[in-house]
Length: 204
Image (cartoon, rainbow, N blue to C red; front, side, top):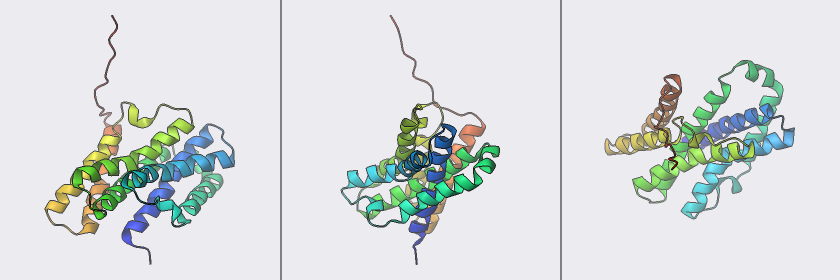
């Protein structure tokens, strides 16, 4: 039976793949191109994390993540018109993937014996880097570099994970609270247009 963390990874993979495929469809990509964008979105952040941690990238040990991304493609193909009508689908799926992958990244880094500050960074990379790759593939300015709160939400989730560990909560509660934090921070930031100050260039 899959563990709780594996279930989180599967759901996150599906959600992130849909967010990538959804944007690729808006750019008129063909099915294969859309699949590549969705797959890169789903596994990109975790791949960078695993390479930095010196372990085999997670998707190379099981085909489940490749299959999850293919199922996401089929989902968009069959329910694409419904997704288009639901204007907030990209935001919802992207935020779900962001939250779940942040939790997985923090947990895996801690399991390998790294300190919490490294785990927070790796959680942020796991959650946000796939979106950067997605945006580069579809020729958009990466969302993480725009004014919206994105990677900062990952950091907030990582900090809640750390605080939960200090309170000696169970691993499942730590993961739940951390994931909810990422999702809520993203939701509130978009709803109330909360953003970081823009660094303005100066000309002579």
